[in-house]
Image (cartoon, rainbow, N blue to C red; front, side, top):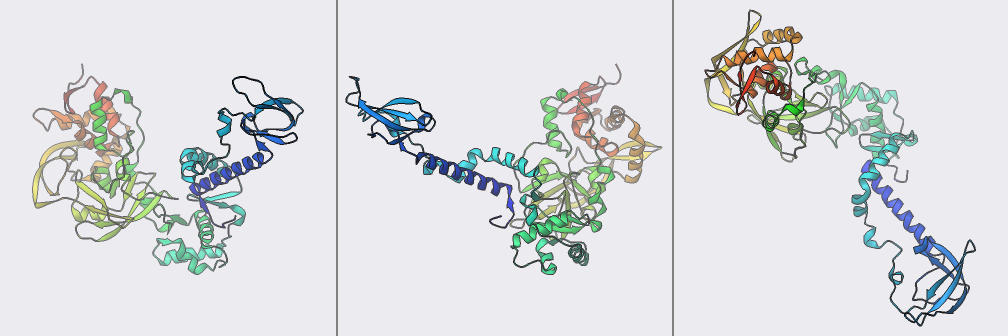
Length: 493
């Protein structure tokens, strides 16, 4: 209210700590000013008010003074003090010997009052308590990470929201910053700009016509009806339903492989450090959907959200420097907007996709493949549909960029594979795994199958993370480990 400006939870926590600290100091000062603080070395006279902080701030009046008698401490005196409740007690005074109460400090020292130190020591606990109080109070409103009093928020009229809609429509759906709207809405000039922005953003967030798509720290608005359908609705091939399994069955080698595959829906999503560049091996379902997986590792590279599930940003082609829009969909764990780019760069399942933040340009991600010096044919696993079944072969396929040998697969008729995948939905994962395993083992003289290749091919027809597949390999009597993540088919016992 004093600043007439919305505040973040962090700012409010700091203000609350400062206020409470000043309040405590003020109360202490008021208490200590009621009488002379008791120090054994000092002299007190009859009728004098004496305060005893070490006894819970007892206040008393000196009613008599007499000489003290103790060979170890003489000379000293004894004063009798009557407290406010009528009780009388005696205390030594004029004591020449050292005593801890002579040096006791009852007010916080300047070094104890540092806001940074107090916030570091108590901030996290107070912040969580404050957030709980704000969320349960009808007095406060929040927009992103900012809070303000409900009664002081400006009312944004339907007409003003219609103007905002028209502006976005003229901008091709968006994005526009909140301040772009303010130029046309004629909000009261005497209201601080921060409060104008907060009030408008609160109104826009409550209106389903508008979607906030900016990265954290920057509010950008888009017309929801003009966003790509694949942003509003998860592409069918990317739908994921968790599959029950016993994680305790996975050994250290399997867990390491799970991290290396880096599936966006894996249960293992480590807290990886912020990085400026990374590489993604393009999975089949993302190649088909024009998307990239947003695993914990990859998500550190892309913009995070302040108020939204969807974030619009800009891709920069690492070869041509051409810019084109991209979308992060946090709930679906994917990045959309690459269908045309995949086709132009001849990316395919298993291709290496290099990603890098554009220096000093937040919201821009450079993307590139690793083109081969000469387009050539490579022996690749191919999967197609024949007589209603998956057909496996190793054929020469023209490739244009570097790829991961275990995850690469060529599919001549993706529509047929996707149609067969729908028909195989009724089969158990064990049955699908066995079909794919036998198909892949027939491509090798050793009849050995690498778990990564198995994961890649199974995901043509059944969306599954590595762990459930590995748990079946570990427990089924049909498979035997050959070491280094290679497996062989033993069949029925």
